Length: 72
Image (cartoon, rainbow, N blue to C red; front, side):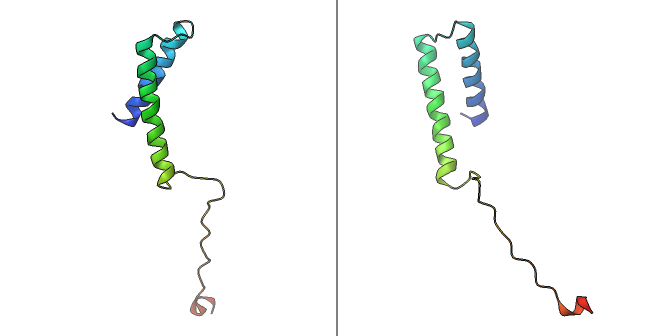
């Protein structure tokens, strides 16, 4: 299942949850738990492979040395 489709289905289940007085049926609960598990695995994959930006991870590039020919 594609990640965008997982998010879309999770949001649809949340909408139905709101319409049903904040109660899931047992089938909806099972589907929501399955989709939530898929999403968590995807996010864990990104964290494990260093694909998530974290504060303080700015790469500092050293300044380029100026050529002496350009200064003349």
